[in-house]
Image (tube, rainbow, N blue to C red; front, top):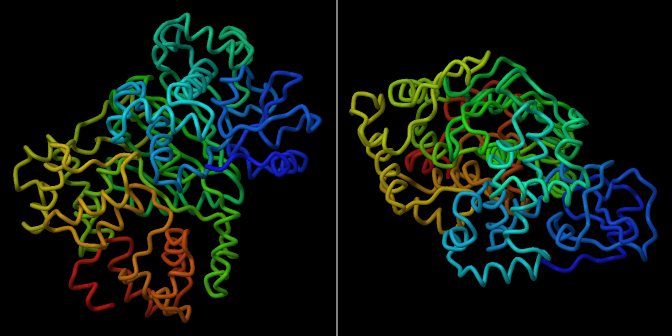
Length: 506
């Protein structure tokens, strides 16, 4: 990552441009605080400021978070959605709680580097090593729990990942210039407290934000029991490192309201990060929309729905199996078959976790799928065997599906498994792993949408590096196409195509 240009960053701060919140922070030497670029306070003199890629780097140099603009509550940097190098992969894994689970040695091992090399690369690029970045995430999680729950500070300290209550107290005072008691006294400034066992979080997003359309897309693919959609609220069961959780999501102009319930509060940071990935909340919609407007026909779709997001996944393994189950069946059929499999094999969740939702089961684990009798798989034998092969590969570590994997390597591993072709592998990379630049050029829905606009699949090369977003615009455009086009495409909407289907449209 290149060094931040001081003059350019200062110009952004002077203009108060909110697009850059989360991209860098402004540290003010005279006050000892760091802020978002859009902080409403008086702009400091240029000679008194320095700029850092991450809050952790500012904290390393003794700066504390601004109480007015709350830089810890801004959207994340879109950089980490794009970068596939070791730093980008590490940042995604740290946000998902990898260091709390496995420490820095475990993180380095998963990335395939030595601990020393990982520390050096991240410190050189970001001004802070993995442990310091994880510490900043812990502080943010602690603040959420302090302000949105009635948990004791001892419980919060260990739930947020701190090794001791003293470390928790010192970090909170250092980062926020307030004690935990003071923060609790001011609770409610960002998130609200829900009923017992529930926190209500405000997940910020850059504008424009087509949040309602995003939830409708997820709702159209909702699996009964695992997910629910009532036209306004999308709810889902989360499988997390320490247990299960549920989240109920509602869209607003610049954020998603998330009501979260967890079996173990140590999973809060992971839950928030996975929801942000699912909802693509760290994207830079202005940059994406400007790039896609290069093609006039596609530009009309972008103009009609600015800020459309390319939904990723809270669980890449789950997305992979759902893609396989949905091969060559209608969307409704895939939802029904997957729902029956989950009801038969998945783990039931208790009523307290479900709350007022219609959620009943968590997605099956690899062990549950391996032990399930054949009659639970209401699908062709070849497809059932593919599900079992993927589950076995995930169980023995031959196939790793998480936020930190190398996309190219993972795609190659998927293609090595019998029953998975290029469409399914690319779909998993796009939806499961959140890659922003995948185009499913043999997808019947996309092909019909392209031709209705007078375009061909080969035209998609011009939309890099945002082809995943172009694909979502094309999928959504079917609502405005003629009935013949809708009829031709409806049976495969959002579903993976087999080799036979790909031959027909290529």
